[in-house]
Length: 167
Image (cartoon, rainbow, N blue to C red; front, side, top):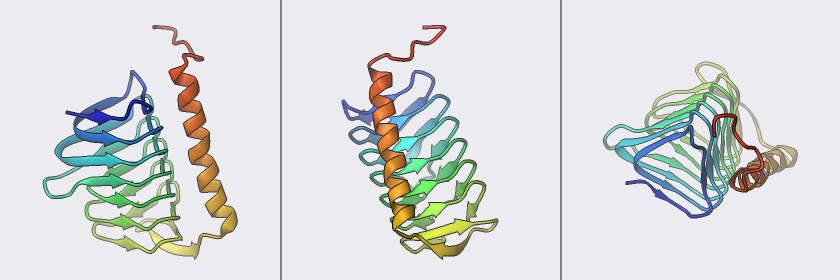
């Protein structure tokens, strides 16, 4: 049974099932899929799972998303850990057993291979994903501002500022 914090936002078109925990002010957007049917999915505070993204697990391979994390549109995180203050870019894939260290960005379309350990503060690009540089202060600020923007946006959605055509 999902355990969703009272201040979290799940869009009506998102799918959340099984062993899923969402922390304060986190959000799941239209067509996001959070499928905790083989192990646990845990999402920390102030994180967002954007449109079309998929979080899934295998038995013995939970999915853990830290605080202040952005999972971009159509990204996949499967049985992996994303530490605090990261961005997983649009269409990126993080595979079973991988760990993305705090303060990192996985660029749009990049693939973090199974079991790969990405050091904290890394910028990862390519297929397979390779660390191409380290996060600087401006990058870390961008990560923080992105998470904050989604916290503000989910609050506006919770207040029904954006009525749906079919609501």
